[in-house]
Image 1 (cartoon, one colour):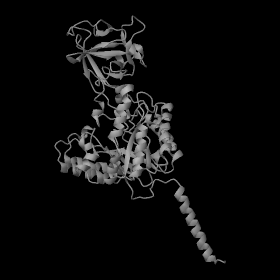
Image 2 (cartoon, rainbow, N blue to C red; image 1 turned 30 degrees about the vertical axis):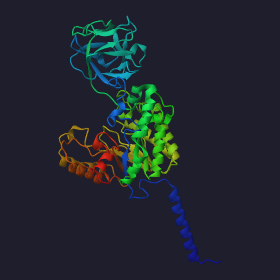
Image 3 (cartoon, helix red, strand yellow; image 1 turned 90 degrees about the vertical axis):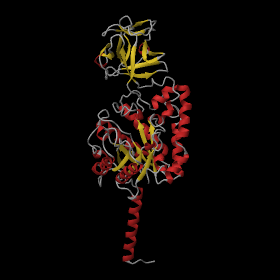
Image 4 (cartoon, rainbow, N blue to C red; image 1 turned 120 degrees about the vertical axis):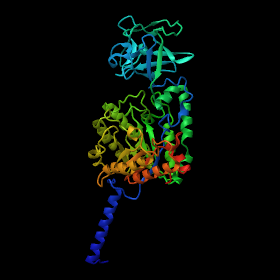
Length: 514
């Protein structure tokens, strides 16, 4: 059969067009999306696979001696000197009892060994112990790692729990002989009086309730059962059905780094969170929901807060290549495991790294390696990079992310946690959303840069006495503004004992309409 020249040209053009379409179909996406009308409307499943005690306080109820969890900040005032125990110079030398007020050097962070034995960590990260060079009774803070000489017990007065003695590993109690001399050589057979140098007034000056605290608090025998019950009941299949019915199309699931070692995670973490995440992917697929995996807790903590599973408030993530590579391995594991599940939509490399402890250099190095780990397994999963907190340049990741296809910048917007919000009225809060948040979001939204994601927000504020209508207006303003984010938004969180932080409660009670 003969073809005319015009027909041959038309056929060649058609073949060329189809070839281009086919190639586009298999190429990784650029910063634009195939469906520009799609936006993530998600809810965070906070407090589920990474514990946050304020979300579900009852999870901690059964811990013995639960006042003394890892990271509890304690201050001790000698009843005889009337002064506070202090790590001189913040650590590296002796313990004294000569400070009239308590701040950083006078605060001791607990490391819990069991319900009765503890280590005390001081400001410069050394541990309180007994001086091995002398008689073994002088109290110092010189060791960078705790051993037998750094193991103490806290003994409380039965009818006044704020009065304590501190039992040293040599069997004797600490005593403030003078303001400059604290020793461990008191037998402890007195009457707890005000003239007793072994008695201290204890103040609990804060603490943490995260995954490390709950698992180490319950211990290796009880923690596995407690956590499995929590994972099996806090979020269930019906929650995914509810989410899909109420106009949401995705979930952001915070996970901890130890999940990649399941079923044998490092102590004190326990097995089972990976199975729960597997279930979440099955439910998401069943109900047509997208999943954003969010590495919420990185090894050694990226921000020192309980939601990053910090043991004692320290922030050590990103300070070594080994640490960064360990985190990349977690991302590699998670992406490889779920890349064939159609619900996997995005992988968030880390949540809320805190500047300056998490340096831009370390974050950039990790994001490059984390991005490559995702791309090794998936050409289409979005890669989300959380902005650092505590810094002013919201576009500092643009030089990095703009060269990465399918990259997303995550910003978190709360009208909380800053004194500037304390006295704002209802209308002033709403105006802040409409004016300030719009400006902030516009600043990180560009036509040829990474997509933007408001990964956490909540319809809560510092306003007292607000009406239901006030909350409705406030929530609507945020939905309107954050709905312009080019990737989408995620409410914090689905379920919470604090009603306005619970999207489930807010929807069921008519405070939020999607």
